[in-house]
Image (cartoon, rainbow, N blue to C red; front, top):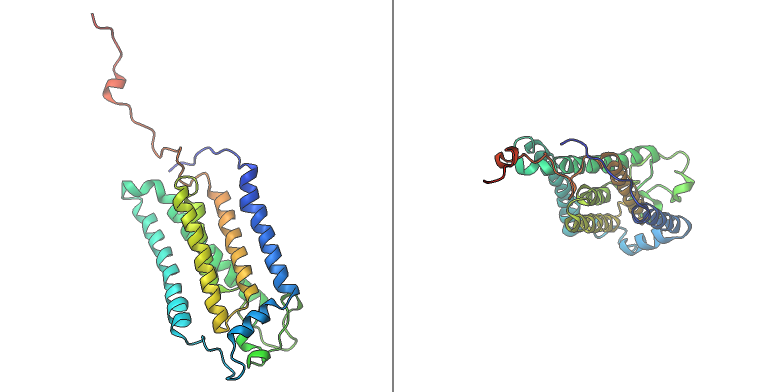
Length: 256
């Protein structure tokens, strides 16, 4: 598919896709940083009397949401990649070739940036902290890791990022199938939130970890959309020029 000419994005687009998400992220991230929200929520999931996280090995948090949730994201990325490959052979998939490739890239970029963030920040999981039976003192995000402690790999939230990366479905289809696109956005938000909740219940992440993953995945999806928008399917874009019929090619003559 050749790139199509596109009009500049209007002010409402930047309001609802740029300014509003940014303000929501800044508010949520700041609230987590300046309050004890992370600890308050984590305390609800930790059993101080027994000294453990009841949901850490539970079937719903570990087997269903953690393991099967991870599989769902992997299957979605794999099916999108297969659809991209098949689009070179199947005519009916050709209009969605770039949408399929975009979704693969959005999932890979969102989760990849979160993985990079884990390596760069070196933050620890709640279950590693002294408050919850571990050995690492609790510090806020901007305070950095305690001196002398080994680096952790728990910030941002990787599992939640898998769910939030599916928000890319929205940008992949918003110019052609807006109803499906919005459903994809809702699904990505819901899955990321559910995955984040399960990981908080297991003691793997604080709320702030999930908030940052959501912001990173949305920014990655939006950035990819801006770069690939001219290739993505549109309601007003024909993938191939219409062929003239034989009648249209013949000169028109008056009947005598």
